[in-house]
Length: 181
Image (cartoon, rainbow, N blue to C red):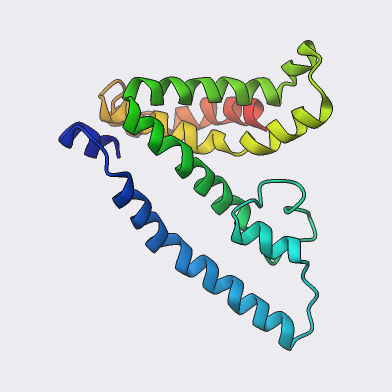
C-alpha cells in the first residue's frame, strides 16, 4: 500500500479490501464449513462461540480463544490480521505521517500494557483486560510495517541485516522476546 500511495498519490481501499477478501475469506470460510460437516459426521462438540469467533475474526479475544479450542484456535492470527486491515489502510490513505505516528503510538501502548504501566493510572481490570486482548498481538505486524517502511525509505539498509544477521539475532531477538513476552 505504501508503494502504491507513493507511486499514485492515493490508495484504492476498494481494490485493497477486495484483494484481501478474495485471498483470505474463501479458504477461511471453506474450512469452517468443512469443520462443521466433520463435526456432524464424527459427533464432535464444537461450541457456537467458536464458529462465531472464527467467522467474525474475533479469536484474539479470550471468550472465543481458549486453550481447549484447538479446531478454530488458529484463527487468532487471521483475526489480528483482519482487525489490522480494517484500521491501518484507512490511516495510510488519510496521511502517511498519521499512519507512522499511529504505528509508533500503538507499539508504545502495547509495551505499556505488557509491563502493566496502566496500574499506575488505576484503570479498571475489565478495561485493561479488553485493551490487552484487543491489541496484544499487533506488535508483530507493527514491527513488520515499521521495518518495511524503514527499508523502503532507506532509513535502514537491507545489507546491514544480511551482513550482521547473526549478531542481530543474538542481541536483538532476546531483547524483543523480553519486551514482548
